[in-house]
Image 1 (tube, helix red, strand yellow):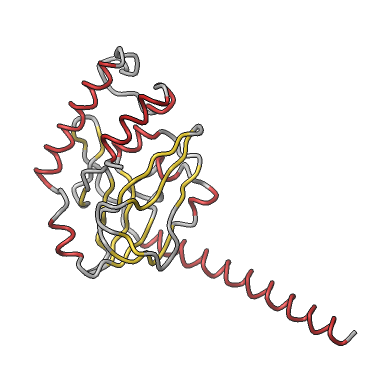
Image 2 (cartoon, helix red, strand yellow; image 1 turned 180 degrees about the vertical axis):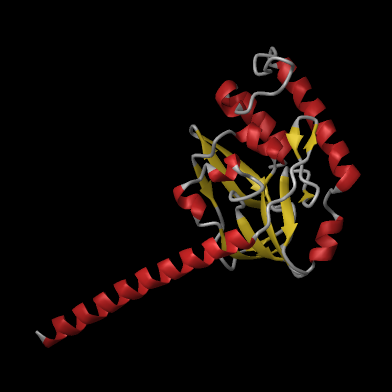
Length: 220
């Protein structure tokens, strides 16, 4: 009987500790999200491309928080290509990412898009809001939909390999032009009036065509 009471005590203690820790982590993340100032919107070739961020050619971004820490997520081009995310598969805290290597994945309608890391470093936080609301990653890609927080020891060198300013704008214009050519080859059925790409290409394209675009533009 004594053994059962001891086991019950420890089970209760572990459960309470787990719940308290979960609540504390949720409060910390809410406070962290509230402390991040919104980026100024900017439009290039029909896509949002905030000036404050650094962009990888695989359509992910890095936002420096300090000298060696960044947030990363997907850009507006990737958001429209992928469509509303049904789930986000992210690495765990402590995992090491390589610049240009696979970092996380998004699933939509039974299809998966893998995305690359714009920097090299250790994952120090994962956006837990995406567990309950994965669509945030594509609905608000530059804000509440950030995916990972990464500590990058060689951040300055990593950022020099990314695109910003005039180079980022030219790259997005080129990406838009290349996408239009691919979509025209698919009969133009996923171009909206005025030639704008549809906001959810995964819904409009056959799986094989969509996967070709994902591999080409997301570099995975």
